[in-house]
Image 1 (cartoon, rainbow, N blue to C red):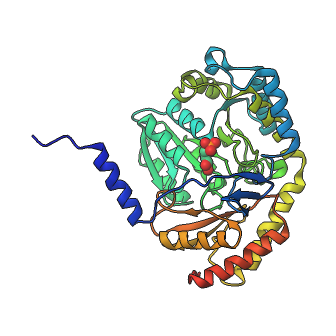
Image 2: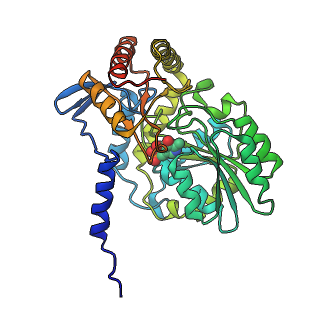
Image 3: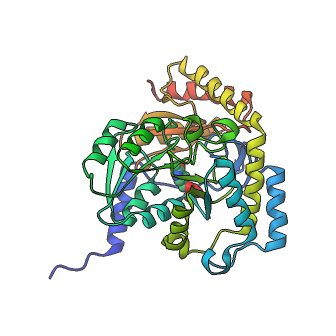
Amino acid sequence: MTPRPRLGDRIAAALAARDAASTRRVRRRIESREGAHVRIDGRELVNFCSNDYLGLSQHLEVVSALQEASAHHGIGSSASALVCGYHDEHAALESEFASWMGYERALYFGSGYLANLAAMQSLLGPGDLCVQDKLNHACLLDGARLSFCDLKRYPHRDAEAALRQLMSEPDAAAILATDGVFSMDGDLAPLRDLALLARAQDALLYVDDAHGIGVIGPEGRGSISVANLGAREVPLLVLPLGKAFGGQGAIVLGSNALIGHIAETARPYLFTTAPPPAMAAAMRVSLRVARSESWRRAKLISLVMRLRRLTLNEGLPLLESYSPIQPLVVGDNARALAVSAALEEEGFLVGAIRPPTVADGQARLRITLSALHTEADVDALAAALIRVCQRFSVEA
Ligand SMILES: Cc1ncc(COP(=O)(O)O)c(C=O)c1O
């Protein structure tokens, strides 16, 4: 009889493999944070890797709303939403998002990851089809896996391939799911094409707009508004709130029937404590600020253009992205780590993104801009990038 494999041996082998491939992950401890500046190991760095695109995570009114609502409601919801964890604050946030985005109903989850697991798991089952862009966020893929449906992934932004995949299973109930703005490449999904083919194929179009909401479109309505689409063409929309809104959780938008079904049947909604009501209160304030303070979006766009102008002129390999996600592809994992460390020596925090977050050979610096950055921050980063890329022979 062969001995039972030992988990300890497997863990040690996996660790050695990660060491060899330069894919070890470490958590950096933030000692303090103010605006776009963080203190790590006693050193102040300008942070170019957070998703706080609008700078709302420390906005005075948002923080005050959280404090006041915690004093009133306590810090936790105390139960699953379907037991006694659903509060007035959750309901108010849901109805404000639904009316802002023009959907019948909204559902607030504790995270974008959970929201995607929930929507996929409750809507799809064995024998159904989920067609997804190859670069969709991991939680969309994990959600499809949790539903035990047939998952097919098309090459990035290739709408014709999506159509072929939908046509390959004409008898299966189907969802076509895509990120609105892709989290690691920063580019936009071809939403108008996807909407057309989803309609032609009777598939439900599902968009996760984690990196578009608040950031692009009028009032920050995100990718679907940029594509001039709404609830009719995109029946299911997921809006994570941990990025531009600076907080925590996610809103899922859809028809009464769709959202009602998710709320009553999704395991990641039923079997978890509802998010804190105080966070819902803070997110209502974030929503108000994000909508009204359009100068934050205007500043972001000008910083994006500035960084691209300064670096592309010097031949740096920035991907074609006009969102605040500006990836600089380095290729090799070890080199990406070395470039990130060299930038840190110069006073900038920029994470090295490596497999499995991106494909093998596609390691990169995921530079993110925020309305909190100044032009001088961007100029200094561009100068450091040019120096460091020269030193490590990173070129287009
Ligand atoms: C496209 C996309 N969807 C969902 C998520 C997960 O959201 P959250 O961080 O709220 O779990 C992320 C975040 O990393 C994301 O990039």
